[in-house]
Length: 371
Image 1: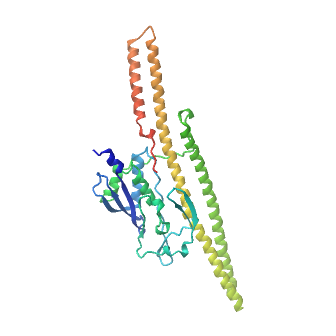
Image 2: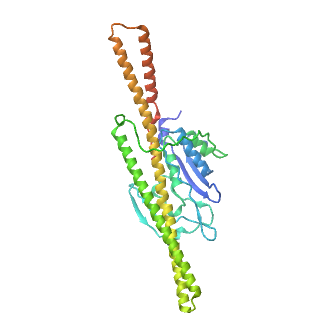
Image 3: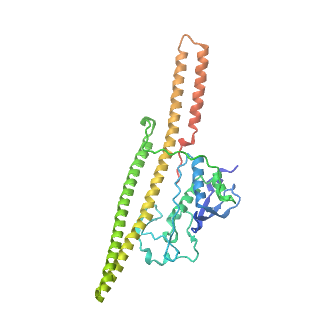
């Protein structure tokens, strides 16, 4: 049996070394480093398909339903240039986290930055310092950081990094093939409808904050759709103008006007390409991030709903215990005591006390979090 101090000093590091996007189901090469005694090797490098990451998320969600899990980010979709080579994601906006956990935003001009040069190998290397990497990751050196950060959140959580399923994910030689229970039907969560007297003020405040945050994200998402639609319209307008200028130039006999039409057509074509690129970048930065946070909010609501149902079950058993105790007190003060009735009341009391104890031990009553 491990000593408590061993658990306190145990660690598990998961870092993505390379990614193969040539496949329909991209392959992530992951390096695991740990000092946990239950693992066979202190360091191991292994490949996992993105679909296996999905299975890992489902497995942890099914077996650790009292833990608030971050949602697995969507698999990044690589882009290729005209020659078929993969191009790095060119973020026009990124957030840098400083050591004191404050954040600042800055715009970049990646197209003029030499650090965006394409590596010789088609597999995209992800270079970073694993520990507290949110402070050191250079967004210009990675294709997509969110899956790496998701793995770090799992490895840093004290409940998750000791999970048998995660160990199988790391150590399996034939891929990750967990037993997955049938997916739970996700009901649309529009709010919480339980009695307010059964909830504390902090829980209600968290529910209100989630509702407000959800509405804000939905508003931003709707606004982004409107902006992208406008950009697509502008792009089509510039392309139509380009076609018209080409048509005018084709029938123009004056050499000077012909060259003018030709040059104007080139410039309007560039403007159309710029509008299309900005629309694409907006989708891949703010659009994808807003969608991801909406999924996280839905996951948080589901976790809080499970916690609240467990608490409501506990409160119901507690009320039944109090009712049984009052019944016993009434019998004790009664002048006529029926032996059979006393036996039934004692049996009921023992049953409700057992139920209350069982519901009190439900892990959902002490909801964990992924930092």
